[in-house]
Image 1 (cartoon, rainbow, N blue to C red):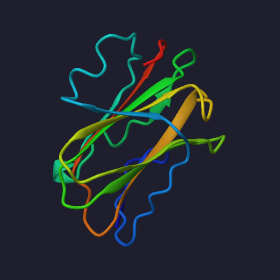
Image 2 (cartoon, rainbow, N blue to C red):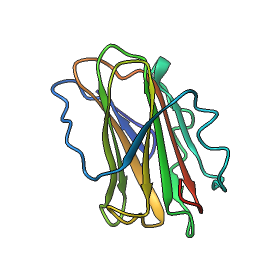
Image 3 (cartoon, rainbow, N blue to C red):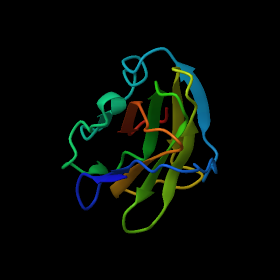
Image 4 (cartoon, one colour):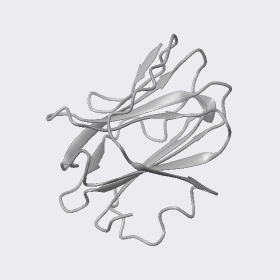
Length: 150
């Protein structure tokens, strides 16, 4: 099953075997809530915030973009479902994958960080895809960009 929000932003809910390959190396840390992970930084106004608890998106018609000067990316994901899911964040024109991360079904929030390295984070529009294994993904996915390293 695939749900497409627009031509530049999509969520794919794919059943079958989910790959757990990682496209890059990033810092991972556990966090308490979505509210406390973004406050100390100058964060750009364009934020992606998806609530997957009802298999919906916060705003499926709005693409997620990174503005020039905001190359430090923070991906927060919390899986409240019964199976793990994978989040991929891919630049539309360059094809650069800045995140390809698996989120365990443990109910804990995890933070993945790319501070403009491994790979470099270009500005522009991104497609965010969520892959489910043998179950529909449930939880929260938040993406924010900052002008300050996380």
